[in-house]
Image (cartoon, rainbow, N blue to C red):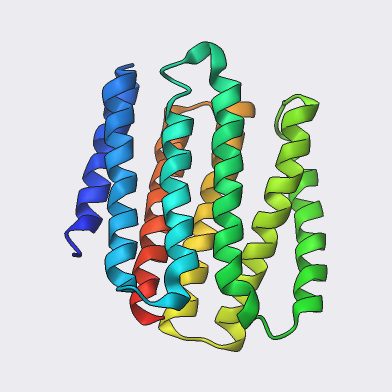
Length: 218
């Protein structure tokens, strides 16, 4: 089962290498295999537990979103369409993760207030760094608003009810958020160097693998 972890990272490395070589279709295939690894790992770690099903659903939606985002390099003229489609599916995945984390939050009002403030500060900072049209910014406001709420819920659970599950889950979600921020700064902002593409890919897959492994301790 745990062989899926290095397998995921190897496929990720091949995906990045093929993408660098502008081999869009083989790169997309490797990206799909990398994502299938963390989905399979999550399913095996969960072992059919009812409480873990929303997280497994989140992993599956993440895999689908990965493929949609990967199609940007295959159908370049419609890259914005696939970017938004991938973002919508990722957002659905965040709702699935939130469905698992939210019931465990002890102070829901405080969590909502904190996430609203943090999301506003994050978007103010991010939108000062990137250039994107109004539609993308409007979607980004919704996307990061929900994502920050998920992060606050996950971190809150890690603080108020620390366990292997809550700490691993929160760590995976935070890595995922960092990955998305760097992705946006790379795609629409100043971080154009290829190294940042490698960085956000690594953070993303390590984050999803961490979320998958957390299911062992649920």
